[in-house]
Length: 186
Image (cartoon, rainbow, N blue to C red; front, side, top):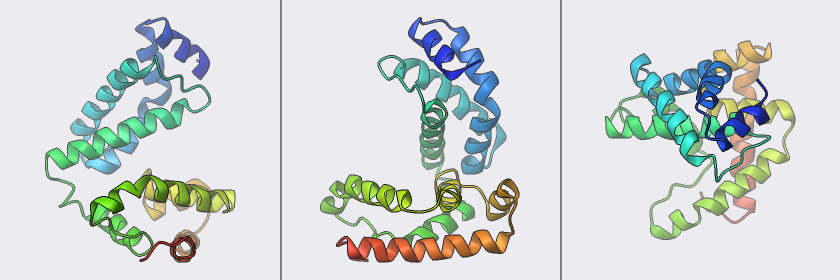
């Protein structure tokens, strides 16, 4: 079923919207959540919570044209929050690895002013990504938003792992330089 029809079902408060959403996006949402939580049952709970959150947000939100991203963001946030609640985030080596990679190019928020600047930083990162080629954006987002492994990215894009690693390394350096140019102290 098309996304617009599913969203119309949400607006009509028709519960079949959940079933159609699960049929179309369930595997993707479960994969995103599992990469974060590392546990099948927790991932399943997060996905179910995602459906409830989508039900509560539509309406007033109307995510036509970006329904997949809308759901992905919800499941990602729920999954990360679940890890924080269970204190798994500190012990998850993969998430720690991703955090360390990004710390090389994004300033740490150590005070209230830095927290306020977080939205501005997000806009600068979006601007940086907009200037990149499509393939570089895909690699960056899959790695640092969807938390895909280098192997998963290389398999999905049909390229070597070393190419993905090289793109990520160069993009982190370019992002660091870009942010320094924009006035961020690293």
